[in-house]
Length: 495
Picture 1 (cartoon, rainbow, N blue to C red):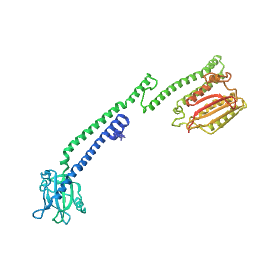
Picture 2: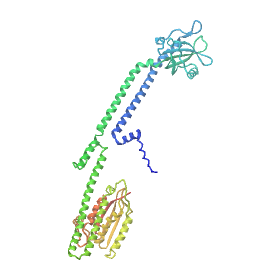
Picture 3: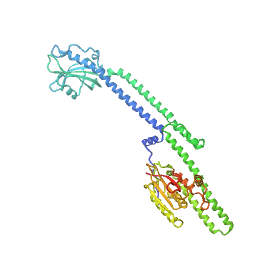
């Protein structure tokens, strides 16, 4: 016995509606064409409705006055005949009521006691036919109290074997010297009156609707050719940037596309910054490893520099780890988004971390020098970034302040003054401070003011790069309260 697996059934093919929705999502031209088709169908529907309304109004304007006048003529000319029967003294002046099946008819019927009608006079155009009314119409006609007004309605009846729509007017009246009431009916087939005009009007409506449809189609094609041209121009400009023929999108785009071009230019600038930053990190790493490598070479030449080799390797590992952290920070898009970023991927409380950092610095310098480190805060704030990056930036400033301060270091936290603003961290000491030229020298990569202190002089410059990655700001000045150096670190805060 062998096991056989059934082949999986092919996925069902998407239906027409699903394919149409997918086409609409993928193509702007398809959207324009769909809107044009809907507009054309709407025009056709409106034209048909307008044509029907026109015919209805023409029915009332042309037919109703005519049949009402004929009805008045019948009532006025109704009189007893020679044998006491109902007769007409004069026939209607319109000869169409004499022409067989001309679409113009009249009848005079006596109302029996049971509410039915007995036709006594009919127009010659009816021959032996009769205008067959529905019982509800008969009831509504004879139910009106005198004096009876004319009652207009539409009726479909069979005349000569064909169902024909009629416009009917009826009135109940009595005839002098004759017993009972009589129903006077005049009916006209609308086709007989409106057909010549309807053909002309229908043709005019058809031409108008066709003209509107052509105009909608032409406007749609114009929209596709002209309205979408800025997108094609944007595509060409992007291709130029990709080929290196241009460094930015500089075309004169419509206002609706300007936000897209701004974002694309910002993306191009960001990519360039990432490349430049990578180059700087490689330069930092090469500069950091230059001295340990030289020491290792000298120790190798001496033959007995084990301790020196170990120390140099540890320094090299520390610098490599530092550069890896810098690369990690540089890869974060939300760090580059600045304080107005719509998303908040990292939220780090500041005050508690500052207090923890100050506690560690006190432990570090407790056996080196008598220095008081304090934290003063007007309120807590939340940093838009990772905790390790915040501690590394502030620790660099506090460490320098402790190193060069005499007896006091103050760390101040100022929350953002407005929503989604920038928090402010001030680090002040009572040391000698720095002059303007010394500050510029300190911020330069590889330059150091104190050649006796250990290190390669990358601390402040790397700190500045990290601050830049977070779209922050680092400003140095003189402390008004302590007299030493004052470092102002501004970083993006969350709400």
